[in-house]
Amino acid sequence: MKKLSRRLVTLALSGAILGGCISALTASAREPYDVYNYDRWGEAIPSQAGYIAERAVSGYDLGVGAFESPSDIFCDHNDIFYVVDSGNDRIVAVDSDFREAVRVYDSFTMPDGSRTKLKNPQGIFISADNDLMYIADNENARVLVCDMDGNVQREITKPDSEIYDQKRTFLPQRVIADKAGNVYIVLGNITTGAAMFDPEGEFIGFYGANRVQPTAEIVSRYLTSLFTSEEKRARRARNVPTGITSFDIDGDFIFTCTSSSTQTTDTVKKLNAAGNNIFASNDYTYGDYAPMYDTSQNKLLAPAIVDIDIAEDGNINCLDFTTGRVFQYDEDCHLLFITGTLAKQVGGFDHAAALESKGENLYVVDSRKDTVTIFTETDFGRIVHKATAYYNAGYYEEALEPWLEVLKRDGNYWRANVGVASALLRKGDYEGSMKYAKLAGMGSIYNKAFEGYRMEFLKKHFGAIFAVVAAVIIALLALGVAMKKRRRALAAEAAVPADADIATLDLNKGEAAEALQALEAEAKADEEAARLKAEIAAGKTAPEAKNEEREEEQHDDGPETR
Image 1 (cartoon, rainbow, N blue to C red):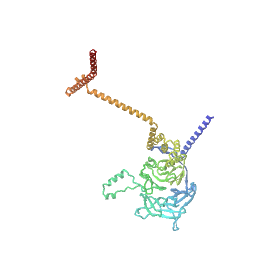
Image 2: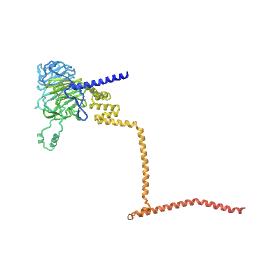
Image 3: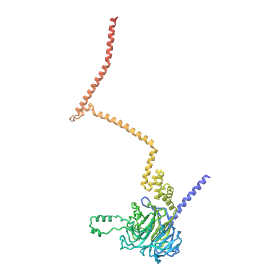
Image 4: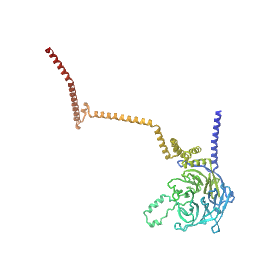
């Protein structure tokens, strides 16, 4: 009976493992691309999918006719999606299941009661703090601020300010607003950061400008300018940074991305209220580690991050236009998953334009296919996200079991090895932590674990170690004393040469004289010793002689007395 029970348990476990493998293979097989990730050395390796393409939705599917070059998508606090249908000059509101359109915004009411229409809108943002809609109306050179019924509250246009170059046009591409009502606008022809306006629409200045990447050519120009005249400096071409492409807001921070394929500085930034980049000191790569080779153009294509989205759990989603892929990072910018590709099938893109997330799903806009592709989270992705949430919150021990489950499904998943190493370090399993830290190539964790392992070893074997050290010290001291006596004896023997060696001494150097003096001194010492011995012997015999004389005198006097 016991054998039968064991067999049944074994079969059940085998079935569960086989089912998991089959589901993983099925998930990969459904994608029109090879799922991969990167190891500790930056090499692309096969991996499990974190998301799979569920379906692609067109305007026809939503009952509003075909989309035409959609450019942006946003999900508000009520779980309503807003698709910017740029070619049709409208905003399409879609239900939370992305099955049906609930409203189409194609005209708006101005404060004076007149009606106005959009012209090639490019971006949209819905504020959860004031229930206002912000629309980047590109070719009308304005940003409309209106309520959810389409009534315009304010119209932000080109500012009349010395700070803003009046020679440049006002072409809004993306727009967001913070909790205080300040409005930030990405302008297509401005590279000095996002234009910032107060809640009343007054221009404040520019926010979050990118830095110029310090290439060898730029450094050379700067050094040369130190030795040139003011006139030549004025005529010298200026180094202009790349502009912001898109952004998203999460609490008190604004995340920006840049689609430049020639500059890697400030590709992704996390800006605080003062406009300082929290990621400035981080040396991270966003997108593929190596450039993509395009056979049709016969050239390498570097990543171009065209949109960024901050998920509810704090993960950072970056959309790469070059490869048509979504790169998902945790809040510390560690790579979690890579999803999508350039392809005609569902899950692939022709012209990836915008990105949004809600719950377990990702929504990607393709402005050439005129669709929105919905990706849903896999079981593997769910486990990774659970472990990541625990880990980033500081609950390392709680994250241990999910990380171990991740390694069962994908033994090469780098982030899991880091998580297990950290969890074991916190639990005091230093030897296990060293093992996983070595697999992850995390020297900092390994060093901490090694320190703990060393202290634990010393505490456990302190008595034996102390005894061995004490024995070694005593042995060394005894050996030192013996060696010291031996050196003294050898020195004494070397100081007095033997009689047989006198003839071999060098008379020119006075060695014979010194030897004779030594022998004379030795002879004198021997004579003195003999004399002392004789005196001692004499001192002992004198009392005996006196006693004999006394006995003789008594013997002689005896008869006379009688």
